[in-house]
Amino acid sequence: MSRSTLILIATLPLLAQMDPREIVRRSVQVDDRNAKLARDYTYTVHNVVREMDGNGAVKSTHTTSREVIYIGGKQHRRLLEKDGKPLSPDEERKEHANIDKAIAESQKLSPEERQRRIEDQERRRAKGREALLDIPDAFDFTLLREESLGGRAAFVLRAEPRSDYQGKHRDFLSKVHGTLWIDKADYHWVKAEAETLGTISFGMFIARLAPGSHLEFEQTRVNGEIWLPKRGTVKASARLALVKKLNLEQETEFSNYRKFQTDSKIVSTAEVP
Image (cartoon, rainbow, N blue to C red; front, top):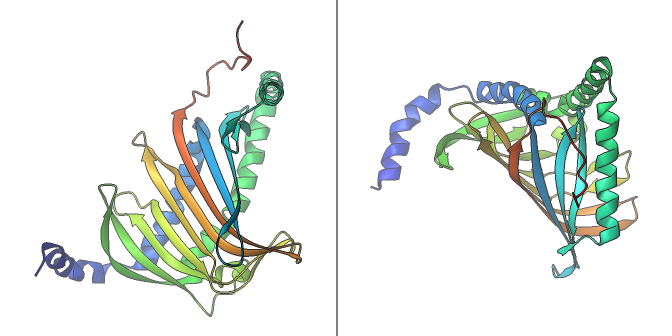
């Protein structure tokens, strides 16, 4: 009998004593603090979108790299690269001008205006978290095992939609199932895999995600204080505006996290001669 099998057998009694729903509930609660800390970080997002034909062959590939930074309590994205090529001088000047404009505007904000901007961001963030807060009640969870990811122990849970869930986000949450990896020490999500069970609509039916679409998401611990996105993938069949059908693969990587001191003085991004 292998060592890993012996360890699994030894942990089965402990796993049986734990409430899977409570594990998920705690993970949703700690995510709120995590999202607030994320405003102190700037990072790079690299996005790859592949459009496939009916046989699964790649028809086209588009890539972008952007730097994400909070200026005056508001998130801004500066384009760094497009389709594997650096920006043209005109595009570079335009991106710098947009950031310089944001900096100039933020430096004119009064403390009250800056606080209102942060509060607006918080309201939008809270609205975006509504579906996340419903997850503990929308699914039945099974604690499968413990597993090591990135050198840290994680609970592995299976999530299946509950037929009796009637919450605000039923149209979405009742049509997905998947697996969660939740850090055992601080209950943050390390990884999530999900598959759609039915057609999911977005933006007042502007886009529809077909059944069988697959989504993955991973996070990493940064500076010993926060969990931030590491990688996300989507493999999906989608229909835009109820007309155009697309088979897509999208990969998003997050990197180069730097803690941005909120009390630092921001200066122009233009190059110094």
